[in-house]
Image: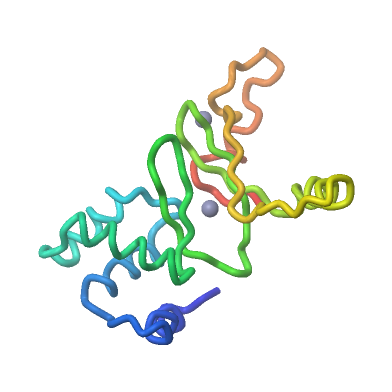
Amino acid sequence: MTSYEQLLQVLRDEGHRLTPQRLIVLRVVAEGRQHMGVDEVFREAQSAYPFMDLATVYRTLRLFKQVGLVTEVAIGDRLHYELTHPDDRHHHMVCRVCHGAFNLSPHYLEEFNNTLVNEFGFIPDLDHFTIAGVCVNCRPQSPEQVGVGSEEFTLDEDVS
Ligand SMILES: [Zn+2]
Ligand SMILES: [Zn+2]
């Protein structure tokens, strides 16, 4: 788990000034739930710092992404952000009905990765790989499936 102080150090090391806007956006993303939309980050940042504007939030998130502090996840047609945890690497399954994002442990894709490398000589960029589909809560339920999954697969829960 990365501490807030370590996150700040990343910015300093990259030569970026620790402006109040950056500190607040970083804190919102660090303390917020996973996969926050830009508008959510903006709302929370603005309640902590009324002078915050949306353009600054966009710029700040882009900067954080550039230095590797946050990971960008496309959910539907909107971008979401979450803190990059080196020890919590995961892919995303994104539901096209409810736009929920579900974490997928990298080990599920290891075999797929090896197949591409060994059989095709192709090295895939599977980091932050996103699989679109329909989640267990949104797919049509057949009678014997009713009640399955609704507790295990709640929105934004880490299922890895
Ligand atoms: Zn869904
Ligand atoms: Zn995620």
